[in-house]
Structure formats: C-alpha cells, structure tokens
Length: 461
Image (cartoon, rainbow, N blue to C red; front, side):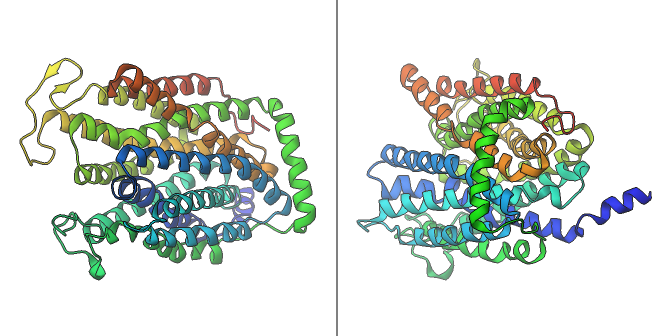
C-alpha cells in the first residue's frame, strides 16, 4: 500500500491528464473538417478544374506532407528526448499550423492563386499538427502509471472524436450551405452572413479550426507538467541526431518494436485508404451526395466515440494487442461486407429495390452500408489508440519521443501504397469494389505481423 502511494505521487493530478487529452480535442477539426468532410470536397469540386484533378492534386499534397513528416518527426523526436522538453516543440509547431489553417479562407473561387494556396496551406498544417502530435503522445508515460496508459490513450482519442462530431455539426448545420438553396444541412441560413455562392462556409472551416485549436490547446500548455530540461538546444540537437542514428542501427535488437512498427505501417496504410476512398466509393456505388456523406460521417464519429470508451478499459485489462487484433478482424469482415453492396445488391448476390428518389438512407443497401460503416467507425479509433499504447508498452522509456517519431514514420512513410494499389486495381478491373478489396489485404498482412509481436511489458526494451 505504501509502495502504491509512493508510485502515485510520481504522477501529476488527473486534471493534467484531462488537459493533455484536450490536445486531441483541439486538433480534431483539422482532420474532420479540412482533411475529410468539408474543405477537401470543396477543393475538388469548386477550386480544381475537375473533381478528378482535385483528387489528384490533393493526393500529391497529402503525399508531400507525409514525406515531410516521415523525414522530420523521428529527428525532432530524438532532439526532444535529448533536451527533455516537449511543450516548446508543440508551441513551435502550433504557430505554422494556426497560420496555415487561417490562410485557407483565402482559397476562394475566382482567386488565381486559390489552388496553390489551398494545397500549400493544407500541407503545412498537416506536417505541423502531425509533428506536434508526436511530442504530445510522448508525454503519456509521465502522466499516468503504465497500467493506465491504454485508458488515457483512448480518452484522448474519444475527446478527439467528440470534438470532430461537435465541429461537424457546427460546420454542416450552421456554416457550410448548398450554393443552390443557400441553406445548411439543418435548413438554416449560414452564420455571420457567410455567402453560400462564394462557398464561404466551406472556406471558414480553416479559420474555425485555427480558433478552436488556439482555445483548447491552452490547458495543455498551462496545466500539463513538462519534462525537466536536460541540455541546451545545440548539444541536444547533436545528441538527438546521434541517438536517432543509433536507433536505426540498433532497431533490429528491439525485435518487438520493429515487428510492431512494420505491422502498424501495413494496417495504417489500409486505414488511410479506407477513409480516403470511403466517400468516393459511397458516391459511386450508392449515389450519395455531400449531405449523405456528411451525415454518414456524423454516424461514424458517434460510433467511434463509443468504441473508444469501451476499448480503453479493455486495453488496460487485456492488453492493447488483443484490442488491435479484434479491431483488425472486424475491419476485414465489415470491409468485405461493404464492398458487397451497391445500389440494388447486398452481399454480392441478394437483389433489392433501389432507394426512392429524394429519400435519405431509404434502401436496404444503404442501411446495410451504414450499419457496417458504423461498426468500422467503432473499431477504427481503438485501432489507433491501442497502437500508441502498445508502443508505450514496448518502447524504451528513455527514448519514448524518438520511438513515437518512428511510429509516425511507420504510419506515413508508405501511406501512398494502399491508395496506389486501390487506384491500380480499379484501373485494371474498372470496378470500384475490386479496387477497394485491396485494402483487405493490407489489414490481413498487418494482422499476421501483429501476431508475431510479444506484448510482454518492456519486451521491446
């Protein structure tokens, strides 16, 4: 009992963990509004010459950002480990993130520089927030005991999901409007007199994300204790680069970490492609418009939040590896079910009546698709949350930021492979379902690799 008290005293109060989780809450609008549901579709439909060209350019910007993250995240993580501080790096990343998000407002139809403005600002914001996330993740072991890491990780992801849901409702219900009707998803006129014809509601998601982040990142900066300073920036840079070089040289000695990073790289590639092509697939196979896709996004966000609330305690009780394996199995089963659906078919062979004109989610294929998607939403959050808690379990504690940089690297360095495979298969077969089926292979390979990981605590040390 006395030992337990002594152990608990080494950690800050629970309010610090809550303040830490608000980082996910602060950052989420960028991923929900800009990357997925509002600004990206606006870019493809209103700024690019054609939707296909828009998807191509957005993909190039995403790839460029992913390459920058792959290059810089492990290096900066190693420097932060050597210096002992994380919050100054989060602040340094926050400044370009906020500025880039705000500048998306100026990517307006008719502006000759709108396309390049949107692409550059999106890429800069993506790099900045992903690298800031590396430093934020690395603070977890200093906030709670090891047996509570899974719960803390899931709590952070859940906070992000709820934030995404709230922001999506605000954006679709009160800001972004149909240019033809001038009304939002809730049938209202846009707030602040935003001009639907100039797509101001869609563009306003940039400044909105910047303001949201500025407000909700403050508790992290003020109330979460940072690591003690170990050395000045110059020696820390030199030592950090040496540590990173040593990390790559010695990574084969950390067999579990290496296997896990390869597994993470594989199944994260599949997850990236699943979300990147989900909207395109539903539009092509089911004829959904932005209203249906946005509503579907809200459903996935809700189920994702509930999934994280369940997975956190499960992670702590049974271990993150079990949560990851179950999540991947569910993704494969439900993913197979989703590619079996089109406007008049369910599970490849059962013919159904098409949806009545103008009815929302009225056909059986749409309802099956939503049900399967809701389950996918419930396990995709735990897949990511338990990935970082498993890394905490495996990685050497003194190099935690460095290994979170490698985790970011493994999640980004090959993130183009699954989308490329989907595109090639779709091109070869001229069939969307066949193209999407490639994603299941990435999940299957990731599952097989994960089975080989020894999740014994400190096995990777």
